Image (tube, rainbow, N blue to C red; front, side, top):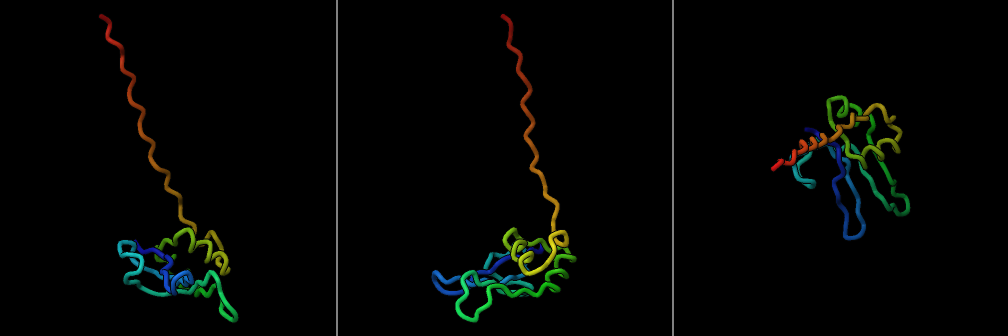
Length: 106
């Protein structure tokens, strides 16, 4: 499955993230298919907080890529409408209740 997620960079206590498209089976800092943006949670001076190529993100989502929750909120912040990438929620299956046992009459 292809996933859109954050890839951490930067120095200690000064994180910077790349918004990457990658195979979900790869480790977080591993090989990716494409970089579609950058996110800096604490910009200084002229640095921008968020830079995203929305068109590339829409293309990957149209191909079936699933963004993580944090990336969804960042894409929304960048101006991408929510219904374009909203994935259906999968409800967990409930465990079947055990059948009541009858007490043996002696």
